[in-house]
Length: 269
Image (cartoon, rainbow, N blue to C red):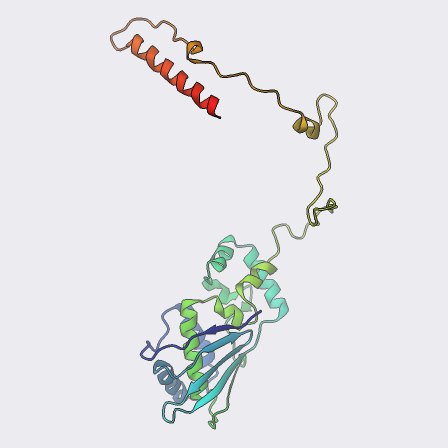
């Protein structure tokens, strides 16, 4: 699974996320903070565009964050505990049972109930976020890590499925791990024919006592169809009882024209 890189946000962006997933991410990581001061300072750094390009990889966020006062760049990382394998398996099973969730993930969306589906908490809980920075500050998190986390909420505004990668896998891996419907039922074994690896061989059906085997019937040559009738052989309209609303001659003419056009189409087929 390759990391994903994102260009730096320009200064002047709104300080608060716009979507439910972005706001939920902020609530999750801010719950680990020991002091509200670095959070506010980090929000100002993020809004001022002091965070460089962001790299998102499984369980890890990284960026160079510039200090707003000294322009010193610090290597900032935020580690997020990946989900356990059992949690991924359970989540994949739940997604497999919901066609709407599969369609949403394929479209780059993240259904809201995946935040806590079947007891699997997708958003990080207390103690699952570890900020790291080479700045001299002792805050947890420091303002540089807080700025990085704030901008990640903006990434989630545009691509909420990115949270899956932050937690260890991406949407494609989750969908690939989802068991197919009826996956618990063993599939019959088939032997692939020579020259066609991976393709199942279809055995011919035994002939029925009162009929012909399907394989033989489908391989028989088909006799040519008789040529379509010409305009002279067009069907004639039987005589209709006279009436004020029936134009027999006009009706006969229309039937003849329709038959001629149908014959022409058959000859071209």
